[in-house]
Amino acid sequence: MTDTESRDSLMYDRMIIGLRMLAATAAWISATSFSEGKQDKAKAGELKSRRNGVVEEFRQNYWKLDPYIRARAPMDHVGDLQPDGRVVMHPDTNGEA
Image (tube, rainbow, N blue to C red):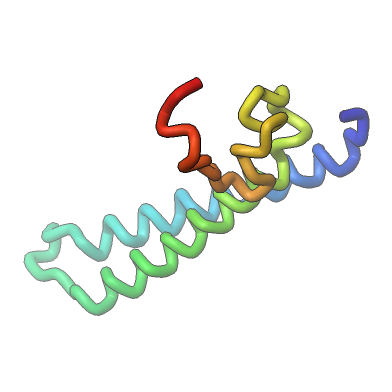
């Protein structure tokens, strides 16, 4: 694709989400460490949930960026790989090519 403005915008968003993911992961790890002799399970659970939300944003961003960075494969052409990353298996083939 030649739309570099959209690609660059998505790449910038990905970088920001990545930084947020690193910060959320660090906070979650800090809350689960026993360095202070105690662990706050409620806070750790909240931070893990927040981190999981950022990870989902990261996943969704990849599939928005996908058309700009990945060549189409046979899975794309036959419809097995959906635009949001879901893989659709066709049960009528029984594993045969």
